[in-house]
Length: 132
Length: 176
Image (cartoon, each protein chain N blue to C red):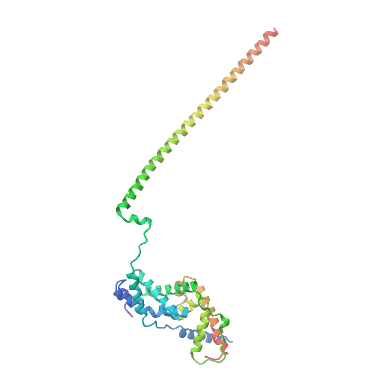
């Protein structure tokens, strides 16, 4: 088939489609039925599906909840700050104790070295006096 | 040009809505009818679309917005309908070739065209309806169906080629 024929066919198909897919009238009572359904839909009382958070719609409950949350946050914050402060104090005390222990340990080492030195001197003196 | 019902009547008033239904009913009904090929199902679907419009009337900004919205919702509802219910699908093999040249216009040819249309995939069929019933361009269709323009164009080309092959070529090159 030649290209002009193909183009002609396409035009024909498009014309056929436009004709076959032309708008059709809706059924005569269509509008009335839609309006009746709208009216029916509007007349049906809407069932309220209350959820747990719907209690907050009431202002008293809502403000009570906000106040309670704010107080909880403040108290919690203070408690957290105190706990942190106590923990910091404990850490400082621990560090001081560790330092004291390290100092005591080094002093003990020093004393032990002195004692050993004295003992060695005495042993040396004793052995030299025995030889004499 | 018809004065906008939205301008004349505030959203939600019966008169404005009734006017919208009257002016757009054939468009909505025809999209559904050409897609579903079932008058009662198309009527029900079109009514559902208008009920949805009534519920969303307050969000409508202009007459053009209403038209765009109606086409879009109808198109999506058609696709949903197809997804949830199995439409009587016509396979291409079942579409018989005409044995004799057709005259300039006849109902048999139109029926045959509808058969081939019914055999198209849902999205391709919807694109053809929006293109040839509503005379929308590929860009408008792409925006409406939230798909790329290239996809719309390729669907259109494929569908037209198929229709040409099934409806015209088998006639033996005789001018219809």
